[in-house]
Image (cartoon, rainbow, N blue to C red):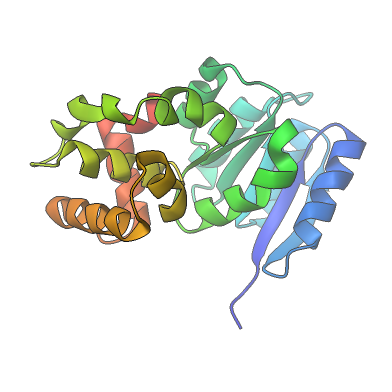
Length: 217
């Protein structure tokens, strides 16, 4: 039996915190280990418990979520970070990614997306709430021709698939977007990874960061 993923939650609204706790505790593979209601309290708790994942609100007293994410990325890079927020502005997404955040989930989507985000980032992925990602990614899958030039002989489709994988989309979701079969997505992904010499999802995400793909949200 594999070890559970240890989760710390931080939000200054008790009702929200209670809802998040219930979401996490309902999953057999997740282990809720602590919570905090301010940025400083969250930082101290995460330092003490060293969880696998920290789910943090952007708007918190004493230390906001972006500043907290920067501290965590610097001090405890092994802790994966999901920000949970009301902010849908793409500027906040860019700030969060630059601060070292691995997942960005809107509070209105938490019930549907938070657990998926946690699982995606634990395996080395980056997760952006589909309500935001769709604006720039899903709206124009044909707009990635310039991305292909960044990689060694990647086709436009291979680059597009690889970018969506880095963002945490599943093979089935990518297949729906490109209107192809799942097998076709798997083939494009495998060919692209082979061309780039990428063997793990973590390596893929690092490559995506190096190309600036994840800052283009």
